[in-house]
Length: 144
Image 1 (cartoon, rainbow, N blue to C red):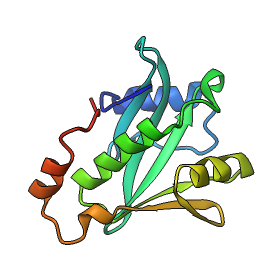
Image 2 (cartoon, rainbow, N blue to C red; image 1 turned 90 degrees about the vertical axis):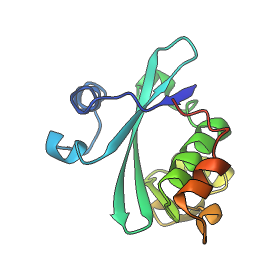
Image 3 (cartoon, rainbow, N blue to C red; image 1 turned 135 degrees about the horizontal axis):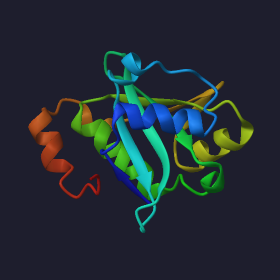
């Protein structure tokens, strides 16, 4: 699986409705987010991430995965890619909504802290570093 920042707002909106995403996101709100696709090594679209700033320094991550890929899309490589993204944007923390026990276990296994229905990941590399320093530290990032 690969993360690629190649998803257009209109494509994301269509993808969410086709895959029964439970929350409505108007296109104007999606335009304010950065969207990324999750693709298989063969280039098949498995899911989508999109990010918005929750409060200063905290990126909120949202995800929708096609039913046939649920349960096998989130792994350490994908989370590493997303962590590098957060470093590049000087986020201090990333949070994600995880309303089910299964999702909470997945995030815990990947090193996130779960409080209630939210998982949190502190981005320690950002303390005191400039954006250029963070970019240098992220050169091995596999993001597209």
